[in-house]
Length: 482
Image 1 (cartoon, rainbow, N blue to C red):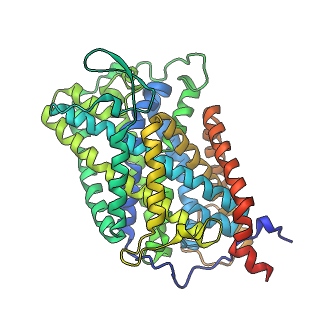
Image 2: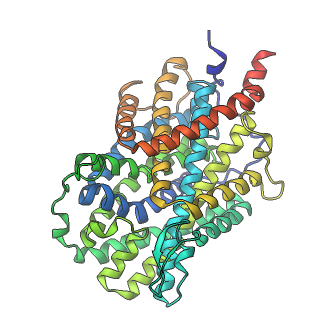
Image 3: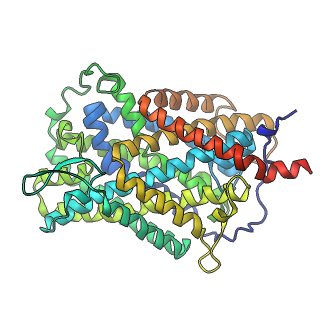
């Protein structure tokens, strides 16, 4: 007999969609959204931080480890997305396969993941905007470019404390306003931005390759400093954990099922297509970056590509790349903010969160309430929290989602063996999901105790909300009790 906390939703694709969302995503747009989110702050910012603080040149290995672990999870996402084409991504999959309490945990985790991720991306975008404007002799007060209390040196040589990252906060509100105009408009804009961003990356690799200094790769794995996670093998694993910030795009694609035409077919294509393309880009790009810039200089650099551009002394290319990257952050925030609003909306529709989060605007047919609340929360984080902290929190949230999705595949293979699946994970119900759980588990275990503490505090807050509100308002629970 199933306990109330482990009640599961029936495994049945939805036949109607009363929430009113437009089905604007086909396979190409899904891949563009996945690539747009994945090839963003993880590539343009955290690559440098992970190299400078954790792995050195071996950050390339970190991205390979992350890509392998993400590929196991990606296969599991593809099976569940084709089997359960409902909004909510890992949240919906856990609800059907593992029960309500597990679904709540992952849904609450995803809210943290997407909101914090949006803050990290906006913080990175702010650094590139400042670098671009500086090249045009337009200087932003450094106190408006860093989290509060950050010690910095003003142009006049005086030492001061930062106020907040104001550009990052403004960027989030601008993107939210674009999303509230309508998903179809935003999807077209996103596809254009991603295309420009891919051109920039290809151009960047071509231009920077002649400037690669092989001495920057020695030692390839710097000796550990005596602290876990600071270089050596543990540093590679810690950087791999941070690299999972990059592969959040897999989960973002799966949140858009209710916005997708023929989701049983198109969701697996979107997930696996974006994963393959992004893994190649990350490995090649990280190799070029640490080859051009000494990793020691990247430890606290929020805009390493801008640093690389300045180093090769090609001013015209530097301007083009910085403009392309700055513009490209639109696609990352587009995906993160869409994912967050869809998770909140689906949890509200299930009764686990207040119903106002599921309201869809009659004109634009977008969940406007969820968009506004998300923008405010993400702006507060972007303005006040360092990017490295935001990146680690996003990564641990992504890893936890991956673990639960892998477990969900195995659970549903046994609990619903005859349910239609448009894609099946190869190797049976255990092998790939088990490898996904193990690889993601190893990486998540290597993350800092402080990151773990923040996650546990967030989950504790979530349990309070669930047992005070969600458990009483759950539509599944109330339906089964009648």
